[in-house]
Length: 249
Ligand code: NDP
Image (tube, rainbow, N blue to C red; front, side):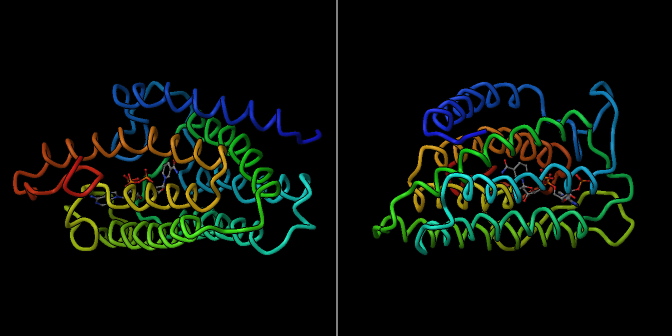
């Protein structure tokens, strides 16, 4: 397959359209994994294996697309942006799944398959777009890099807090506290949203903005559902906490 700007433009358009469809769908039908796992979504698979298989294309495909689009001969800026991407996805693929706690964790094969499809499309678009991106960085682009790193730190810290709510082998849920959980119920999603908004500001490519939009379409509805679930489940849930955007939403 030869990577051309018109092909990437079509993939980016498809991703924006998918974001518009996914947002209302997930507001009505929570993705059936974790606390919303329920029958009716076909065969299930072990969650750890699902995470590795789902996220592996997000590690490999962007590097392939970057090189196929001529990235090898580019200067340090496109490489730096690709390295930020890989920093996130190597952690998500090879560290996060093995740190998860919970004995019965499974995911629908359907969810994993859709995630693979998304990560291939998103990886092609973003890898090629980074290869074609300008070599220079504006102050706004550097602000995006700083936001990306702050979002990554928030996401990792929040996922660490969630993980340590359970002792090894436990399955239940507790109220998370500390870090960005002081302000929002879904601190890990808040970090993820800051990360990919920062990445879009840093890269300033349509593909990176499409990914930021899709991340919001995917995670904001789930954060709202988590928030309602916490409030319904724990009578002593902190009243000042918002769902995903501190002080706002
Ligand atoms: P969740 O917050 O639903 O769960 C994360 C982990 O923490 C799971 O193992 C979960 O267990 C456990 N957990 C969550 N809440 C509690 C609690 N109150 N008490 C005890 N354990 C808890 O996150 P996701 O699984 O949806 O996402 C995981 C990571 O992937 C996040 O960092 C997220 O930002 C990222 N992600 C990114 C997406 C994107 O579009 N870029 C899409 C989806 C996820 P259990 O599974 O048993 O509920």
